[in-house]
Amino acid sequence: MVRRPCGENSNPSIMKFSLFRDYGAQNSKPVFDAFADSLVSSGHMVVDNSYDCDVGVIWSVLFNGRMAPNKKVWDDFHAHNKKIIVLEVGGLIRGTTWKVAVGGINREAYFGPKGNDNSRANKLGLELKPWTNNGDSIVIVGQHERSHQWRNNPNMSSWVSEQIRKIREHTDKDIIWRPHPRFPVNSLEEDFKNVYRQNPVQVQDTYDDFDFDCKGAYAVVNHSSNPATHSVIEGVPVFVSEASLAYDVGNPNYNTINDPIRPDRTQWLNDIAHTEWTLEEIAGGEPLKHLTSVL
Image (cartoon, rainbow, N blue to C red; front, side, top):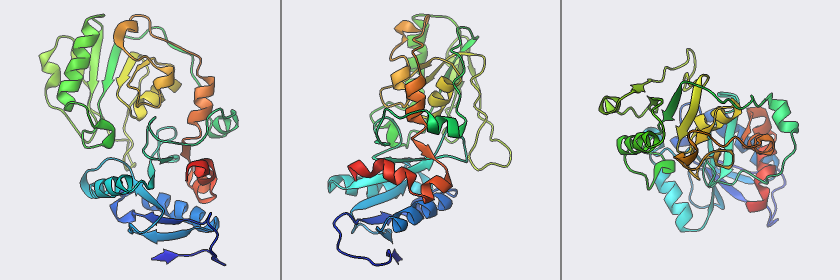
């Protein structure tokens, strides 16, 4: 299917976008549709599942299951130095806001210019909770090994074990190990003292929302996924990699585990608010305008 804007012309600013909708998650259709509407309204051409285009649009970088073919799309577009936009579930208001970025879904991706004001954070109702300085346990949150985010890392069991050993060099606080809901790692906690497993529970009547709650945690450990962002907003210190969107307000290693860094998060929140968008905003072209400078 090809959707062309009315009055199509040879304007060099008009681009051809290919949406790989067939490889999206079950909840991706409304997001793809909204993004396609924004492209056509902006005068661009929209095609489906074609490599003959200027910009590709895929769902997620979790190259697994029905999304596995996106790996070929990702590799081909990068090999030909073409831009690729990634749509993905958001973590700010789960099921309401959606990530839209060039080249990924975490800190390695481009979400648009930084230095934003607080108007959008206020619009979304995002409010920073005061930093905590107590808590009973350290929560390690796993990820899915098939995700592009996890490339160059060891298998999940080895990674979690390594984090536990590094934490134990500094503190004997209880550790809670919480696997990714679609990538469980069995019995790892049995190899360590005072390490306990917490299995994610799906929230009733949702497609992929789970019960992560960092209240009461002393700190959260995560490589690069949504729980770290959620924890920072809730005021819980995080220990993350450079790939995490929470890195700029997090702790890079465990040397500070007994007195975590708790920086000012105001500008960080203002910028994070511009990484996710509602369907209405996507259809209206707001994220597209935010990304225009690199397309």
